Image 1 (tube, helix red, strand yellow):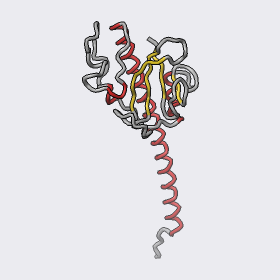
Image 2 (tube, one colour; image 1 turned 90 degrees about the vertical axis):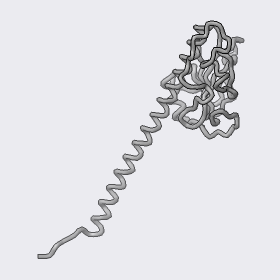
Image 3 (tube, rainbow, N blue to C red; image 1 turned 120 degrees about the vertical axis):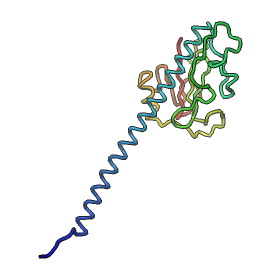
Image 4 (spheres, rainbow, N blue to C red; image 1 turned 135 degrees about the vertical axis):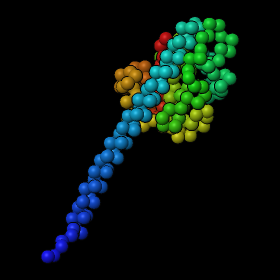
Length: 183
């Protein structure tokens, strides 16, 4: 009786099928990873919005804008720094290390975004590394992700609404978002 094994063609077909299945699984994992980054960043923005609004409600004024120079000692969300009615801390971590999922950082700021002569509070999702103003663009947010973040927080269009990217309101290049916070 002659024993028959697998032919080389049969083995190659099985290997090709396994490869195709593996690529489908890996692409699904990448899509899930991207969705998780978007969700986490939207959650961080909501956390910053809430902290800003709580600060304004408690103190009757906006926090000082320490921008890229925030340290543990100068972070207005975690230190009273003589502000009357301060009831913080308002964030569980220092603003100075508030990084987003693509490697950049988030800050707060004040500017007349809409041209009505009134300063607006905003959250800025910068594409530069945390605690730098290096213009290194290492944390650039992909356009699809910016639109997905906007869809969670606003209207899904980064050229309208409270979330803007790609040059709207500021000189923010593509890869950065500005989110107006209305207390």
